[in-house]
Length: 389
Image (tube, rainbow, N blue to C red; front, side, top):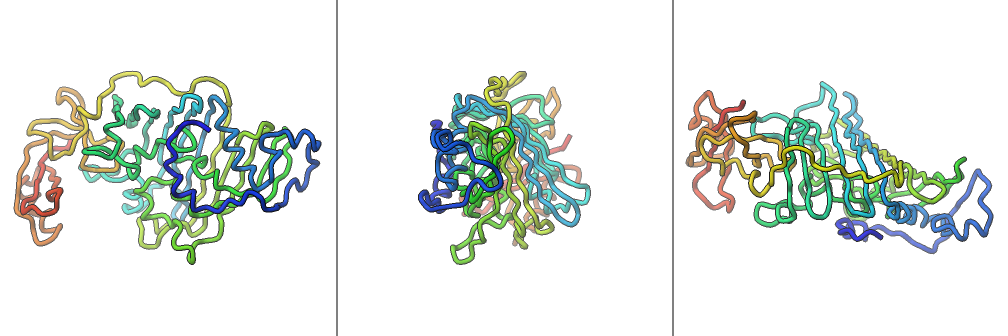
């Protein structure tokens, strides 16, 4: 198994995966000869174990290409997240291009749920590219001319760092170099039957415990998606389909989850969640390109907007969950905003009142972004005034 951090182990450890129970197999097609099947690293084992073993066989491949489509379906249309890229299992690195496609009628709550917000009160980025390995994560928004280089110290959850709760750190996978793909949950899949495919592979019908779903979504989406609850209220297993090639390597996997969204969340207008993953091009070459062009070190360039001095210029696309984080950039080039000044004001009776006071101190022609003291005990609110370019 590749030497990678098994971030999802705590979740998948709760999934029951019996290894010795009997199960159906081979319906609808003539099985291979007993001697050939017994020698196969995947097909020679009990049917219910074969999805798990197919993941392990997939991880033995040097490289592969992947494409995944995550779809939220509702009455007003579908939100689609498309992720494509390459996996270097041998080097434990990969790259991914991610894009969101939202219908015009998508509500503001739903847009915020999937894209986040920026200090300009606009949606977060709809597309970006990630280069991921154990030494760093490099991110470039589709609208940015530069990469941001996040070293381990920037993403370790320490002072100013990120945690697994952040969608940037979420891009590091446990079962593959790139996180968020269905590979993260397939080791918990239990095959119930299969059929032979013309090329000598197999197509499985399987089940996936809903307790494994949480590893497929960054934590900012968890408040909107129905995940597993107490064992008494846990939903039935999610139907899972998996296809493998003649060597037992995964070529496709998919799930469909009905009633997948919380009624009190930002995605309440949607009902069905589908996830479809395909893998191809095994051994076709190193899939991780270099970060061509300008690269900014996160430690030097990414900071809280409240720490940017008067006259400083910033961009909003950091790849992080926090809308307070910005990228400091030269004012001589393109930029999203210029900081006009920092002020400390007395808080209002509630957030709305504090917002009014912050806007008043910045004036009618400027934007205001405010935050209470981090320790929650201070009597002043720090307000940043800025112009949006």
